[in-house]
Length: 223
Length: 62
Image: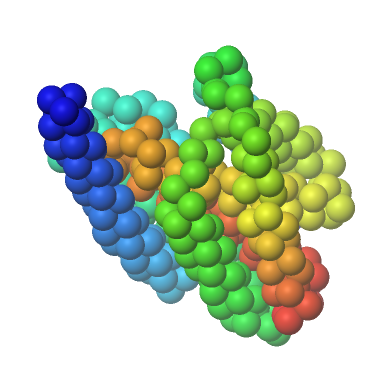
């Protein structure tokens, strides 16, 4: 009986911690997505040159690799997250402007945005309701990412539309897998830092949006 | 959107740097990820197939 008395509060505390991480993650994710949309809107209006996406992506990667790991356990981590998401949002400006200049560009953007939202909400709800541990996928997802990055490097120079299409489709599947994996980790106590959890989910959403935009652009665009 | 050569090289370098960061993490995750249990892959494949069908629906709608 004594063991039960000791176990029950611990289980309750763990559940409280998980709920807190989950709540904080979704609150921060909502704020960063709004901030990202705001900086993307500013970028659309400013119409910066095409290389903006490259510069902001490199800056965001530097923040993700070198600054975030050192600040993730402090309030400074919040500023870094907003820095990363703001930069990535701003970098979308030239791409979105290119779509907006096509006949049905705004429809493609809104469809990609809505589609991304539905995919994220549905997968999150699935992971939250099933409470499954998807950590067995970790290695496979990382290997998939490496294959996609190598294919993307090759396609920069080969510029094959079929390969571009394949990469976009695989990225959507991989990022969907990452949403299940990351949400499963939060639910099962594998991730207790809401800043890192937010960044992971944000990057999945961002990549799904960009890849969906490219797929819809190829199949439904006029360019 | 056609990219200039220097932008192609810069993107390739950025993605190459990403590989340098991803490789050790992937190796670590491959070694330390738990093995899938009964029904685990099925639990993943069902939502992923639904995502594929949904994306096809979006493509047809545009």
